[in-house]
Amino acid sequence: MPQPHKLTLELPQGPPGEFRIFPFGSIETTKGLFLFNPEAGQQVMAAWQEYGNRLSIDYEHQALDPVANGPVPAAGWFDLELREDGLWAVRVEWTQRARELLQAREYRYFSPAFYANEEGWIVELINLALTNIPATKRMEPLVAKDDWPKRRQEMTEVLRLLGLRDGQEAEVGPTLTRLVGLERTLTGLTGRQSSEEALAVVQAWQQAALELPRVQERLSQLEEAQRRERLAALLERGQREGKLTPAMLPWAQGQSLEALTAFLEVAPRVLPEPVMEPQDSPLEWGKLSHQQRKDLFEQNPELYRRLRKEALGY
Image (cartoon, rainbow, N blue to C red; front, side, top):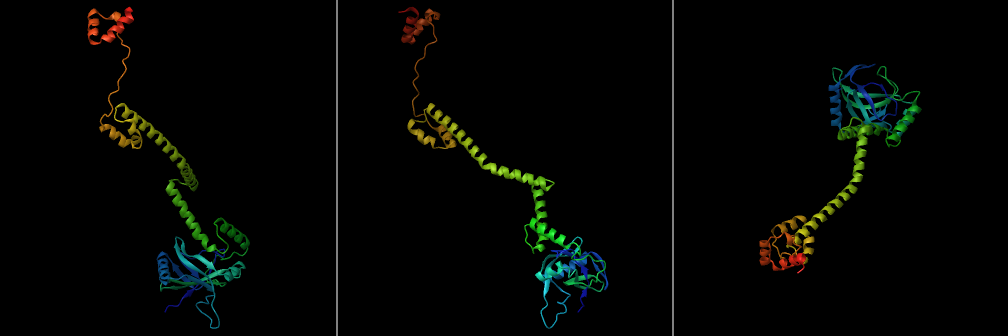
């Protein structure tokens, strides 16, 4: 069985919610040169996914060399993520004790335990350990020596802005990822280039949505007024054409415009033609010839007498 290798790297300022374990390229350590490239990264990820558990962070690799007279406590737990610049520990959950030790700068470095093949490629990560004996050369510390209070204050503000509580530092990365994804979705839906423009579009949509009920109500009122106007015209037509009796009006008013129109197209006249009162004749007695007066007398004696009386007085 191959023996695990251990090297020591300095943690970024923290206690961090995520940090890079291996960058891509050659990793120079006091124990030799190891290689971590994208192909090796895929093998590490495949081995972890097959393992199916979160990986642990312990103290000084005690989990690999457990003592016989007591427990081997964990300092934290994490998942793996392969990114463009290397292998990262993500969603890191520190224990309270580990958090206090890191804040007090009693630990500054971490040491990955891993398997490498004969060519020196890193192919499987076992776990991480907090340590103070770096094996990797020219490391950056996990906890900065001088500016921890400032960093803690900055992290507290970041947690507040993201709506997270103290101790949820591991959620900062996933929350920011979701926010970036939300911004991309927002700009994609609105067709805008910036989040400010996209937000303005969404606010306009919101205002339109608030106005929609009022607009719909006004539209309904206009449609109802138009319907009533058309109905009144159809009722007037039906009465004028003798197809609607007074007794039929309540029924007709309850019909749809389409049904009433279809009815009037085929309904027979049920009322007789209205008797129109004779209007004043445009004929003038003095302009009628003798023959025209004779014809008028034969056709309408009453009109003949009325015109003669109006003109002659008898």
